Image (cartoon, rainbow, N blue to C red):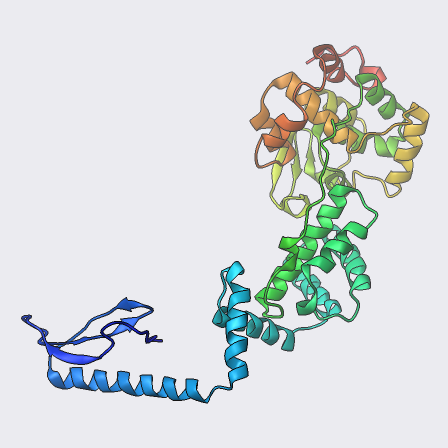
Amino acid sequence: MIAFTRHRSPKLKVVPYRHLRFRWKITGLYVNGKRVRRFFETREKADTFLHQLRVKRENIGNRAAAIDQRLHVMAVESSERLKPYGQTIAGATEYYIRHAEAAKSSCTVEEITDMLLTVKKADGKSAGYLKAMRAIFKRFNGAFAGRLIAEITAAEIDDWLRSIPLEPLTRNDHRRVISMLFSYAMLRRLCSENPVVQTAKARVKAKPVGVLTPEQAQRLLECADATLQSALAIGAFAGLRHAEIVRLDWREVHLDRGFIEVTAAKSKTASRRLVTILPNLKAWLEAAAKPSGSVYPVNGRKLTDAARVRAGLEEWPSNALRHSFASYHLARFQDAPALALQMGHTTTAMLFAHYREVVTPDATAAYWRTRPSANAALSTM
């Protein structure tokens, strides 16, 4: 919109202009405080444009004269209050209308969480992924039951996240999932912004990874039930994630070809990878290998707890088997890119941050000598 401002030469007029094409121009025109010139081929076009400008100026003047004095005062005061934020009355109006429209077409938190779960299921997300998401949504829906998604503020979400009695890493997982929820609501035009981005992340203190000593790994495997031994050995000497081991079938353990296939459907990252079966792992698997069937027993969790008790492992580091594999593999082979591929990482950054120089050379050599007692005399790697 053209804004008219006062100037020493405010009079609009058509004057001749020397140019091969344009013969007329308009002077006295200012837009947003800056002089603007318009050029025309004929006097008729110049006069028509000038007439339209005068009509607009007259209409604006008439509308301004009809405005109530209180509205004038309100406009001035509002403009002053918006200045520290770099906003104008027009910008504030647009912001309000956008939020009001979103609220008018919004839905409850229960409805939007059901919608997103349906979408994620249709996208092929795993049962474990959906289960974890439902658990977070259950907490969120309980705190904001019946509320419209568009009306929930950043401060409310921040307070809710801080009130959850969870570890910082788990709290950040909640924040990530709820942010995904609001992003989806924005996509569906059910809210105008994602307030989660304004909330604070919990500070996660880096902790050194916990690994098993070679002796602890040997005792654990020897104390494990025969149905569980292979699953534990794959975790310790191939580094598969627990969820990947639970889904693993013996048809994907290729002893003759020297690798374990982690299919895309069973991988956390939804990408297929091949994990090398190292000599000591092969020794643990040969006696128990089957043509098909689940590698992980039905009561695997209970059997694992029992094996830990029998092995005297009162302290059990988080992800002990996978962390042990990564630490000893990096120390033994000094090949971070290869290890990243084995573990399903996209970069080596995590390996260097968590597993470098965690174990000693002597412990590394002993770890990769770990075999069933009957095969203890086998040559080392």
